[in-house]
Amino acid sequence: MSKIPFTKMHGCGNDYIYVNTMRYDIPHPADVAKKWSNRHKGIGSDGLVLIDRSSVPEADFSMRIFNADGSEAMMCGNASRCIGKYLYERGLTDKTEIRLLTLSGVKTLSLHIEDNKVTSVSVDMLEPVFEDENQFVSNRGLDKGVFVSMGNPHYVIFTDDVDQVSETGSVLEQHPAFPQRCNIEFACIMEDGNIRTRVWERGSGITQACGTGACATAVAAAQTGKAGRKSNIIMDGGTLTIEWRASDNHVYMTGPAAFVFDGEAEL
Image 1 (cartoon, rainbow, N blue to C red):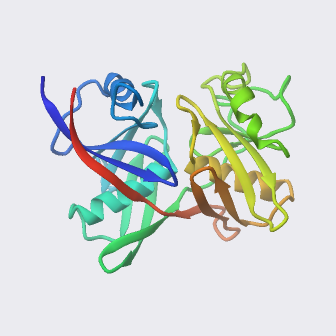
Image 2 (tube, helix red, strand yellow; image 1 turned 60 degrees about the vertical axis):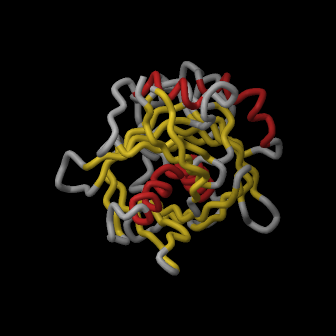
């Protein structure tokens, strides 16, 4: 049984296992994600991320992401920031602006560098979508929330009780309104204008942070008049700054990325 080198990284506590598939092949990534993500019998993570060359000229590199349950995700904001840091600091590129191909389109990563280290990454998450019948059928039977797709589906509920995520997150994830299941955010506008948010991620459960979830929360808050177009989203594992620019209708996410450790694991 072969051993594959990996790198564990996190963005605001949202932790994934990263493999450079330009060098190492992962033939059954869904199975590997379930095995390696197990926090008691595996490496422990929210999922598995594969970094590869881009198959199209519009992008420099590509990513595939598999949740802890083996399901493939469209996109992950925290993982994309980690990929930017990985590519630059591991010498795979000298670009400070990287075009990353995901299942939800090409995202542009802008790296912020100090002393040859990536201190933070800004990601152009493109435009939010409020109606998508493939992801959201109807809000019948749901609490009054806001559906926002950031390439993957999110349902944002504004409440004073963000801790209800542990009780109702899994139920709402699989609600009939969401044909592809859904990421669920519980958000509270704080006195200082920041937004406290807890997340139930589709396929992973409660996570420390969710980049696309932070984007969806900020957009939902701005759309409903609860906040302006720039917000700090405070999640369990850290804070992300989200700006929904009026100039191009794109959502920009800025936050940290960090290495945890390197290792080898059996397939």
